[in-house]
Image (cartoon, rainbow, N blue to C red; front, side):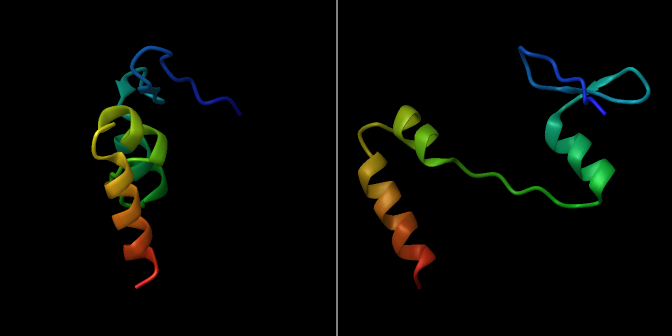
Length: 64
């Protein structure tokens, strides 16, 4: 099946015809909770001056 998603805002078209945020849709349809973070590419794009340190700290946290 195809899951309709808005190309602009990435909201999902649900069974009622309403567009809902993707995290809300996943939580409702999978009964799973969502946590938010940033992938390495977004860290570099959003925090270019701090990205090396943030990524190094994240890597260190993973190995503790």
